[in-house]
Length: 637
Image (cartoon, rainbow, N blue to C red; front, side, top):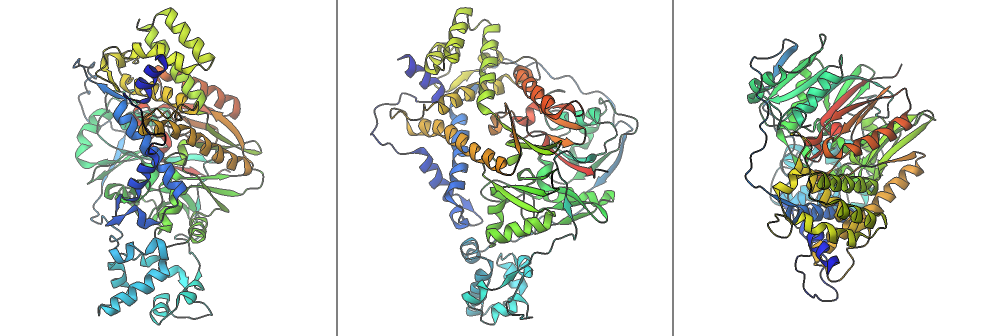
């Protein structure tokens, strides 16, 4: 009975009654729903995505849905401590340049019509082109490039194909002349980089920061200074990185409030801070819509085909598409790529032993571009050529983006891959939560000691049975917890008690899941699938780490907690020569930061400074530091 109570509270087996010996699997239901999800007038099924990838995404959906339903904090109406008032006055004189974006272009690609959508990922670009030309002719429609583009065909990719056998005709003319499927299979593909000689900046600590680009979501702090939101994160960059120029994009209507906020910051005398004013709202994830590097002429910013959100599909985002183009007003060189990519899923590193430049590629970026009608080999060839790397390595989508699962730095003559040790992080989170309950008088000394003893002996059910009544105080029903309980998890006004409680609950679920709690047949399918997803992800993480080892990297685990909006992500930082910008969470879970900092310092050595950037609120929005900043580097000398 005690074990049952614990599972009801933490794992959502909400009054589960007897079920058939083989209940429906929630994972399979979510997978079917994903395939049926609308996409460009059709469904995700039209994209022909591989099932292992879909199942990884389905597990993320399953976990997010469970947390949304069963880790609910119910407000009690007690007002929070008010944030300090903004100072009077306007911009500090150090804010030098304000530029207004005037472009009206908001799209690059027409949505594919049904004819193209149903064939492109399945049949490939050339066969789809041939079929579309035949269809247009049958309807007495034009078949020139403009007509093909109007049907949603990515005609720019056709320019990288040429007919076989030294045929000099344009590829579309050759196809229109009656090329068969066998002929199309012999066509040659040769990608031409958008910028000859461009090399993506290596992020394994070789270069020195030349500048930072950020995107501000608002004009003031989300709650107060120290909350780690978009504005607070930029404040810390201004104050902790003197001499590093910063370019910030901001929705124009938010400028007056931002200038008042920035008036309270500490500005170094030589600070260069440029504002690009935009007509649309912005998310803070500046790393996703631009990648920086160099060619023979100097620094260059490479933009994706268009800025996108989402994992299974590339949902077009107007504001983020246009924002980095404003860098041209500052004299920077900007060029667009035909490739779809989100920067958080690309990581370039350089092997110090042989100089090999590797591009680690989250698998979603591969699938985004095969959806344009390209083969896997063509996509990888395009990434190699476009980003000037020696090799591309595709990594499984253990998390939404790979930059919360790994952080790579050259240390001496080897590449070190920092990776998540989620089990260790879960134990720290649970220990911090228990200490908070004890400090608030909600967990007596004797009960705390017994729970700790059970956890040490891996007797999770016994520990949860003792803890369940404590967390049920003031409960509004299964899966609904009181705000007064959440306050026990808050250490200061900028610390989120609700966010901390949710992390505590998820850490307990995780420990239950990896111990096999998702297997009992008495659980409802949703809970069982949710718990099993943790164990599946640990197996996938092992595959990812083993792949990094096969690349010759030394693996160093860090106690990270990559749980999307429940996450604490120490790996999502920025390496430069002599410095690591380390994203911290702070507050109740400061011991997790300290544990990571100790491992980083020991591994990187005394010549690397660890600069802490608090970004708790950003982490509560499924991002952190690297997600928020697009850095440019000066090459090593």
